Image 1 (cartoon, protein in one colour):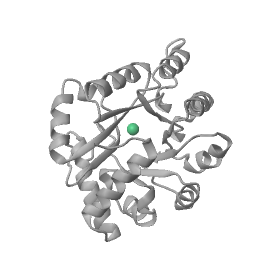
Image 2 (cartoon, rainbow, N blue to C red):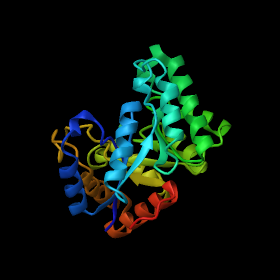
Image 3 (cartoon, helix red, strand yellow):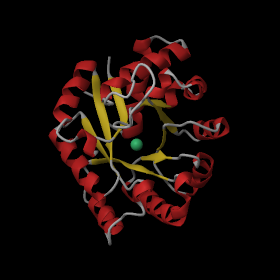
Image 4 (cartoon, rainbow, N blue to C red):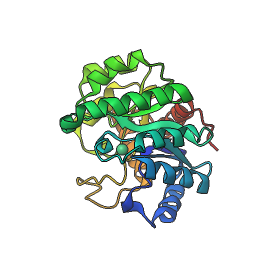
Length: 257
Ligand SMILES: [Zn+2]
C-alpha cells in the first residue's frame, strides 16, 4: 500500500534532528511521498535541501505562510520569490500560502503576499497548496482570476457550500488526523469525491484526541487517515490508498516509485 503525506512541515524546529527517524518510520508504514510545505525563506531553503537528501520521497512546496507575512525581513518577499524561481526542478508546488481570518490586522499584507505567491505559481505553472481558515469562500471566489495549474485546499473544514464549488472547479482537498474523531471533518470526507481527496498530517501540529493524545505527529499517521476514509466512505482500505496515490500523481505531476 502506497501512502501519502501531502502536507507536512519537515523544516519546523520541532522536527530538528529527527528527520532520519521520521523518514524510517514513514517508510516502514508504507509512506511513499511526503510534501514538505515551507513557511518563509529559511524553511524554503531547508525544504529544498531535504528534497535532495531524500529523493523520490520528500518533495518541496515553497512559499510564504499567511502567519508570517508580518515578520518578513526587509526584502524577504522578493528574495523568496527569486529563490523559488531558481528552483524550477525542485519545487513541486507553491505552498503553504493563503489567507487566515484570525490575523485580520495584517489582512492587506496577507492579500499582497498571497497575490504574489499566486502569480509565482502562474509563472512556474505549478500547483498551489492553500491555507484558508475562515476564508475558504473568499478564496474559492478569488482563484478563477488567476491561471493556476491546480489547487489544493488543505485541512478543508467549512462551509460545505464552498466544498461543492471547489469540487466543481476540480480542486483537491487534504484531510488529516481529525478524520478519526471530528464529526465536521468526517462529514467533509463523506461529501467529497474520493478523486478530489489527499491525505496529510500537517505535522508537527499536534492532535490531542484519541488515538493521538498529543504525541509527536509523524507522517506515518496517514495510515489512520486512510482507514478513517475507508470506514466513512465504505470503500476498502487498499482501494482508498490506491486512489489517493493516483490523486497525488495527478495533482503534483509526480510518478511514484
Ligand atoms: Zn500546514
